Length: 119
Image (cartoon, rainbow, N blue to C red):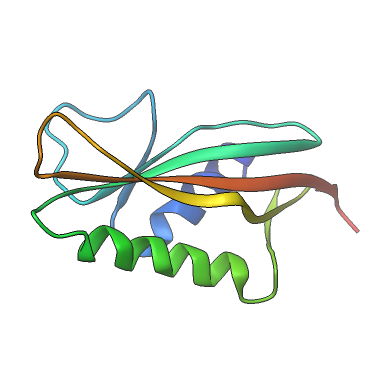
């Protein structure tokens, strides 16, 4: 699995579609996740959980699922060809964002990462 596939698989494991932030289809259905694709020895992935509602519940449920997965042991590792990524909650982990459309709900996430060599 490539690095890109590993990151895509992680973000698509929360029950909603996830897209690299520059490849979101025009007719995307809410809720969904967008993320930045980055690489390096150490990095921060910015991600957003998007919803369309008058309530924050659905986007917070998805955010809580991501937080639980990353925080259960302090970090997770995901394998890719040639190594592993270690992902963890960066501070601040999430922030609610406003939008001109008052029914758009967006939570911005900071996910820290390190690239690890295969053992």
